[in-house]
Amino acid sequence: MTLNETLKTYLDKRILWVFLMGCASGFPWVLIASALAAWLKDTGVSRTDIGLVGIAYGIYAFNFLWAPLIDRVNIPGIIRIGQRKSWILVTQGAMALLTIYLATIHSPADSLVLVGLLIFGIALFSATQDIAIDAFRVDHFSYGSQSSIPAASAMATVGWWAGYSFPGYFAFAYADTLGWNTVYLMLAGCLLAFMAATCFVTEPVTERESLQQDIEASYAKDGQSKTQRLKIWLTVTAWEPLADFFKNHGMKLAVYILVFIFLFKIGEAFLGRMSIVFYKELFTNEEIGTYQKLYGGLATCIFALIGSVINVRLGVTRGLFIGGVAMAGSNLLFAWLAMAGPDKSILLLAILTDNFTTAFSTVAFVSFLTALTGKAFSATQYALLASIGNAGRTVLASGGGWFVDWTGGNWTLFFVITALMVIPGLILLMIIRKPLEQLSTRHKESNG
Image (cartoon, rainbow, N blue to C red; front, side, top):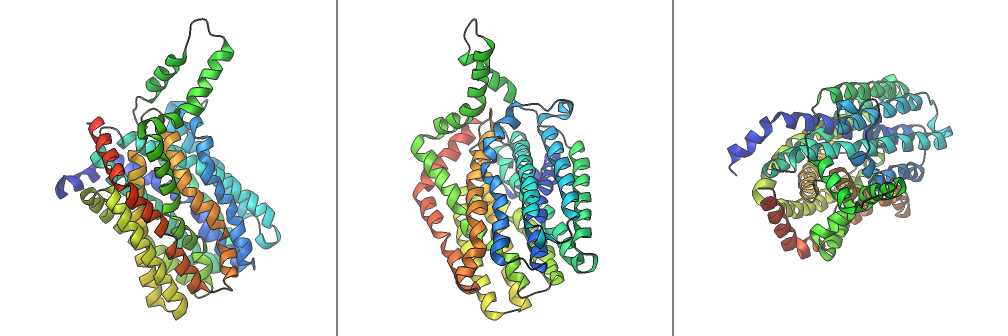
C-alpha cells in the first residue's frame, strides 16, 4: 500500500464518525480520572485514598460480562436509530445525569463514599458505551476494509485523546477561578453535545444478525419448548463468542494472546494513574492543564496519525514492539523530572515523549485487537480482549498511590519500576511474533 493510498483512507466519511465516537469514549476519563484526582487532591484527600477511589475504574475490566447484550439485545423504543447508536445514546444520557449529581457535592473529602459510588456509576455506563463504540468501529472497518484498520484505529485514538485532553485542559485551566463544581456542570454539558453528535453518525451495516441466526439454527431441533429456545439463546449469547475466539486461534496461541494483552500496558497504566498526583506536587492546575492536556493532547493527535502510517508499513506486531520499548523510555523521563523538580522544559519533554509513545502503541494495540475480532460477535469479542488489557490499566494500577507511599514518596524509584514493568510483555511478544503475523495474514486473506 503506497503512502498516497494510505492517506486516502482518511477521506472516508466513516473516519469522521470514528473520530466523534472516539471523543465520546475518551471524555468520561476526564470526569473520573484526571479532573477528579486534582479535585480530591485540592480538598485534602490522601494519595492512597485517591488511588483507592480508582478501584471504581475496575468495572472496565469486566465489561465483557455484559457485552453480549450489546450484540444481541435491542433497546425498546429507540432501536430504529440503530442497535449500536441506541446503546451509545442511552449510556451518554445516564452519565450526564450522574455528572450533574456529582457537581452538587461541595466537599468530596467529606463524602468520599458517595463520590466513589457516583464515579462507579459513571465508569459503569462509560464501560458500556465503550463496548458499543468499539463494536461500531469494528463493524464499519474490520471486514473487507483491512487496509483501513490502522487509519480507523488512529482516528479512534485521536478522538479518544481529543475527548480526554481538550475538555481536561478546560477543566484545569478554569478550576482555580470557577471552582470544580462549576467545571463539572460544564462537563455535563459536553455529554449532551456528544448525545447530539451520536444522532448524526450512521449505523454500520453488517451480517451480524444473520450469522447469529445461523448459529442458533445449528442448535435448533424440532418441537422445542420456550425453555429450550431460551437456553439456546443464552448459549449463543454467552458461550459462542468465547468458543469462536478459541476455535479461530487455537487454545495455545489464544492463551498467549490474552496474557500479552494483559501485560502490554501495565507500566503505562501505573504511570498514568498517578501522573496527575505527581504533577500536583510540582505544578499549578493551570500549568498542568497547559502542558499535560493542551500540548500533550495536540501531540497525541498528531503522533497517532503518524503512528497509523508507520504501522501500515512495518506491520502491527513490529509497531507493538517499538511502542513497548518507547513506553519504557518515556517512563524514565518522568524519573528524570522527579529528580529535577519543577522544571517546565523537562515536563514538556516528558509529556511529549509520553504522548508520542502512547499514541504509537495504542494505534498498534487497537489495530491488533480489531484484527482478532470475528463477524458474528464483534462487541463481545472486542470487549473481552479490551477488558483483559483494562484489567492491568484499572484494577492493578489502582494500587499506584499505595505503591508511591510504599517507596516513601520516592517518585524516581516509582517511575523506574513502571519502566521495568514493560519488559515481560515485550518478551512474550517476541516469543509469539511469528504466530501473530501468520494469524494476521490469514485474517487478511479470508476477508479478501
